[in-house]
Structure formats: C-alpha cells, structure tokens
Image (cartoon, rainbow, N blue to C red):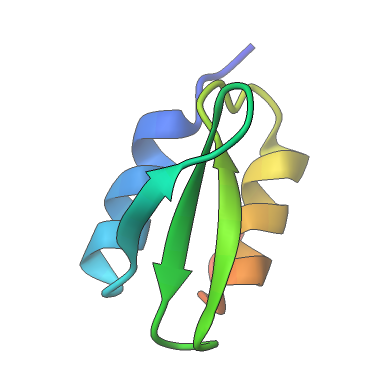
Length: 64
C-alpha cells in the first residue's frame, strides 16, 4: 500500500492551506483559503480514495 500522507501535506502547503490545530484521534484540522473552510486530514493516509477526498475538500484540483 502506498503512503499518501507526505504527498498530500506538500500539496496542501504549496496551495496555501495551513495547519490550524490537532483534532480528535489522529486527525489534524487544516484551513483552505480556496474554500474558506476547515477540513480534517488523517495522519495515516493509506488509500488514494481518502487522499482524493482530502484534495476535494480543500478545493485543490488534483487526483492520485
């Protein structure tokens, strides 16, 4: 299984998204200036489907 966590976080940072706070469990809360909303990011992203969902929630047009 591929690890997508590092790739997702790099894409989020380069798109202007920023870390807000730690969430419940192993999730972090990030803010996207593209959607003007907060969204959760799991610390162990092992599925491309979850990685694509995070990209969609952040407003970034990228598919894994």
